[in-house]
Length: 482
Image (cartoon, rainbow, N blue to C red; front, side, top):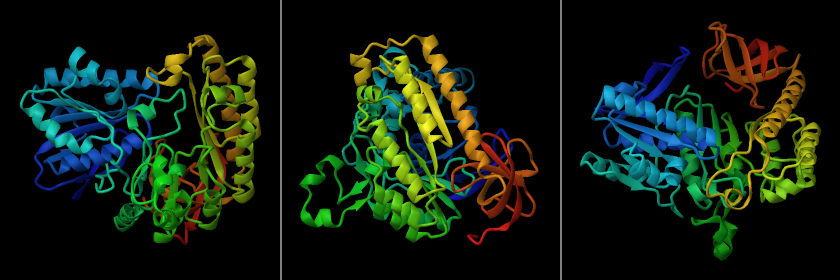
C-alpha cells in the first residue's frame, strides 16, 4: 500500500491507503456506529485485492457502496436519500456504475431494495463481506447479488483493514462482533448476530502494525466490548462447554486491555461501547493501572426509570448503575463518563422521565447522545409494544435532557480550567487554520495555537478557557510521551 494525501471539504489533510496497479475505483460511505466505519475499512481491504482503490469522487466510481445503520429511522432515511443521489449519478454520468448496500440496513431490507424498489445491484450483510468478489462477479454478468447470512465464526481477524480518510494517528480496531443482550428497542442482534470474539493474537498484531505505521491512539470496538471473551473460538454463550484448559487460558476484556497496554505503552488505548451489566471492576482497575488506557468510559444507560429499563430488557437497575458510577469515580477520579439516552420509549410516563432527569443530575455526564424512541421493525418492542408516547411529548422531553446535558457538560469542562493536560494533535481546528485540534485522555476536544507542533505530537496544553464541549489552551511544550 502507498499513502495518498487528500483534502476533505474542510481543507483537512487526510491519508488514503492505495494499492499500486489498481485501476478500478471504489466510493464507500458509512453511516451509524463506529463499527460500521471499521467494517468499511475491512471492505476496502477486500476490494483492494480485487483491483479497487478508494476514491472521494463519486462520479468516477466503478462501484459505490454505502454501509448502513438500522438503529434509528432517521439513519435509514438518510441512506435512502444517498441511494437516490447515487442512482442519479449513475443515470446521468456513469451508466456502468454498480451500487451496493452493506451492513445492518442491508440485512433488514434486502428484498425491498433488490426486488421491489430495484435501487441497488447487490446487498451484503455484515458477516458476508468476504463474499463481495463473488457477488460482484454476479453483478458484472448482469444478475442481482445478495448474501446476508449471519455467521457464528466470522470476525475478520485475518483482514488487514485499509484505513479510510484517516488523519494517520487515530484508528479503530474491531475486537468483537454481534450482541447477545436483546434489548427490546435494538435491531443489532437481528442484523449482526450472536456475540463472538476475535483472536487476541490478531488484535495485538494489528495494534503493533498501527504503531509501526505512526498511529498513536486506537479504539477497541464492539457492540459490547466488555463481553469480549476468547477461549479458542466460538460464541460466548457456549463458553460453559469449553474444556478446562480453554477456560484456564481464556482472555476476557480486562486481560485484553492489559495485553494491549503492555504491547505498546506509549499508544493511547480507548474502547467503545460498554454495557453497564458487563462492565466489571477488573476492567476499571486495569484502566487505573495503565496510564496509556484513556480515562473515558462510554456507558449507555438508556433510561433512569427501573420500570422502563425492565421494559427495555436492560439487565441493570438505576441503583446498580449508580454503584458502578461510584466505583468508577472512586478508582479513577478523573474519568470522563458519557451516555446514550432514549426518551419516549413505549409507556414512558412523566414520572419515568423525571427518573431519567434525576439520574442525569446524579451522574453529571461529561457528554452524551440523546434520542427520541423510534420503532424499529423486527425488534421485540416493535412487535409487542405500541409506540404510544406523542411525538410532541418526545420532542419536549428530548429538548429538556439536551439542555440539561449542556449544563452538565459545561460544569464538567470548566473543571479543567487552569490545569495542564496532554493532548494528541489530530487535525486542524475547524474554526481556525492557525490552531490545532486534539483530544485529551478524557476524550474532550482541545484547541490551541499550532506553533511548531504537528499532527501526531503529544503536547502539554494549559487550559485557559472553554465552551461547554471544547477546551481552549496554550501549549507549554511536548509531552514526555513523544
